[in-house]
Image 1 (cartoon, rainbow, N blue to C red):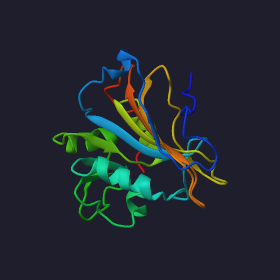
Image 2: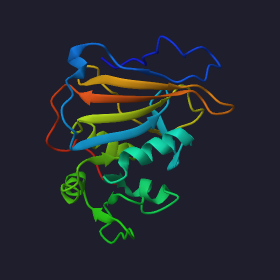
Image 3: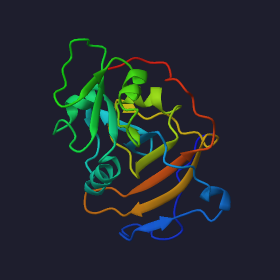
Length: 210
């Protein structure tokens, strides 16, 4: 069963730019385990679309600020195409690890790994490890992660070629969300935080490095 897009009870009127933070009242939801070793952070639209021809679909100022705040001081793991799409390399204040099948690939300011398992090993000494893309790396890592930080864009991109895997309600629990209304051409979106309730895999899912 896929997690449906949840809608706050207030602050969701068209054109309303108020921000609403909702935290479930259930005591069960409050029993969140300590900081996860492996986390995923992503921005996706209503269909799960995340990219087109190696680039981002959306450039939301608040989303970029959140990404920086959450990942600074931690490790970030990404595929080669994601690395090459960054406007600034490496991402400052973070251990950057790039996954690629190209044995001679050089990523200045970053570590290079041939697989997700190797990349996680390189970053193992960090407090938290973030998977930041692209699509294939997300597919391999989602089953291993214990936290998911999603920016859900409340719109659909007219064109996309990269999608985020389905998030199962049997494996993930939404613990917090924050609504941001639309502003001009910027669509409305939500920050959604999830913790794993199902058992995480110990090894990467099937797939290949970029």
